[in-house]
Length: 154
Figure (cartoon, helix red, strand yellow):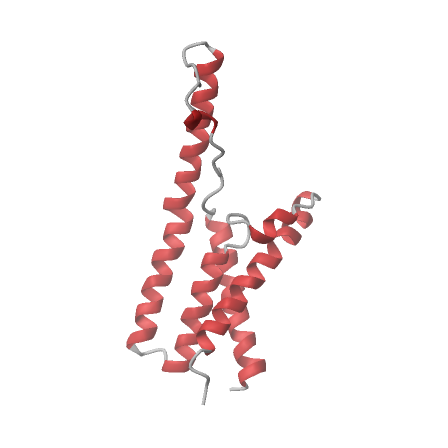
């Protein structure tokens, strides 16, 4: 009998794995070390997609792939993956564009950024590219599968 918290453990492990992979993948691709990626959102792989895909697969293992709970987690997985790659990604793009517009207007002398809101530090990378979401899904599914195979032994 599987522990009732098994899907949570699998999902948490997948999220941690995704976060641990981020700086090393960036190092491999750009030859630059960014340890802040250990605790940052954005970048490859998506920890949101990793967590939810691991949760979904684990629920399938525990309750069956034809269960109502699996259908619910699958639907939520699709929503979260879509949100990470679209809504949150474009919110980040909007922040970049707004900051550029403020800088340009200030440079032209048409804006006096005396209001503290103009100097507020905002995170520009909120979401993910489709590839980063796919990387998160693969990380989550692989983590859940390996967790199930080696630690549960089914």
